[in-house]
Length: 447
View 1 (cartoon, one colour):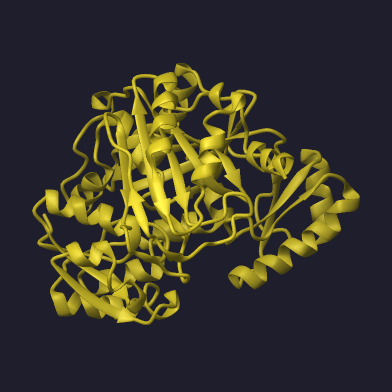
View 2 (spheres, helix red, strand yellow):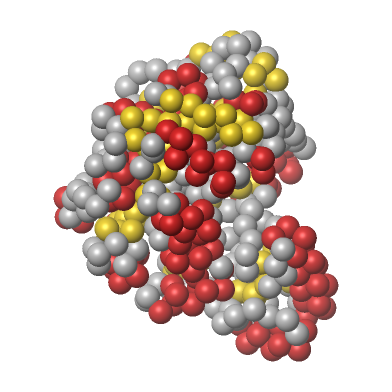
């Protein structure tokens, strides 16, 4: 087991990893920018190192400063959390060159899954169902027309190196295709420094289903069930739940087994999430995230397994702590991402939190690094915290969530709490009848 872990992140995820380390008796080091000097994870860590000014490029994305912090403090491993350097293959390689363990997959696996085209090829080879589309990057209009005609309109053009909706355009006819192709390539080049794009069949009303997987790097893989992340705005997840209201037991077991076998065959090490669009009983691979997800607590709630503990165990060479048949699923869990944003326009709302009170009681968990008097800085993601609620079934979970949202108090700034109070009372949400376009339509109708 590791003696000392450096946490290369901030906010609630840094605090989440810190807690896991403390429970395992591992010393902790956190890095922080000058803007985060008073953050809760900095206060609670055994050691802290300031690595630069507020801009992420000068601090949390500064690989050399983080490696230097490891060497200064004697950290023998780094947990990257999510975001920032968590899916940076170069970072993983540099740590390995310095004999520091990256708590995550190999740099090679990060590269494969970070390239959307190569990820799709790999998924297909591993037996994971994929969306019909191009086999590689598409550069010529003639080729784009041919592929679109073969798979049928509408089609979606996506940036190979992209994410978060950038470099992504829908074409509903051949007349739309040329403009969509040019626009997607231009956006992809500007956002990611790579204008490669590919074409896929566009699904009209899919769910976003993701499967939590773990591999030991030596040919064993397991899954921890699925999460439904269909409530999204601009391709950003807002509300996640497990298990999905859309799947039956047979579908759940089938796609989980497919993913676990694929991870084993890949020789993958650590946590990963294989993401799908699901429509009319069919699953279509869209990407794999080679890190811990923001929404991992809902999986922890229904399995009772600490996924960060498992990450650390696997990275230290201890292997997986359980077999697939030992993983049990109980009840239902929902997570709401509480952001420092206007609940309608989603404009960021940095500032000082004058009063902060979290709900409690059976089945309630709040992952947050803020407190009364804490100032939300304007430089980073606007996530204040995550409200995770667990119940014996979805009905109980929804009732408990309604109560918890009523108890949650964040004063001094605007937050998305009012949005969730509206959603929990909506009939479509209560019945589990929504898709990835539902929330944006709902917000448009409200305006």
